[in-house]
Image (tube, rainbow, N blue to C red; front, side, top):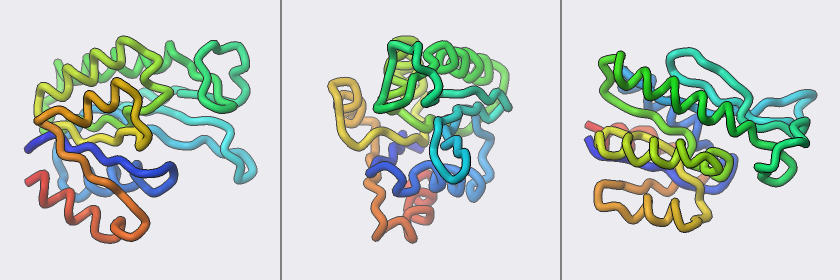
Length: 170
């Protein structure tokens, strides 16, 4: 297997695709996924959850004290670091076949611990992840690594994406 990173515009279905691929492959997985937090059909934040069950708030509109902000969301940097610590522990204790990193994005990248962790995971050559569409210096460097396959998810190709990515992973 190689490292496969899915990119695309927000809300195109990257996280949904990750979850479907994980389920379809049946592989032992460590890592994390992010999800929207909604109240009355309005997005008010994001959660981050390890596959071993640690679920924390990644960012919230209510977090006005954070100096780490993306749009109207305050990022809980300590929760990003806590997920990194949990997944590092999982890497050492679980017999895994795949590392899921959903997402290598603006909020997570405020953490220097997270950046080091991503690079450690990529060295294992078994990452399935998502990465933000609009690059910064860090994501550009990641996308240009020789051990990375980038899959551009769009509304047009998302019907075939699961099969395509499973084929790439096998």
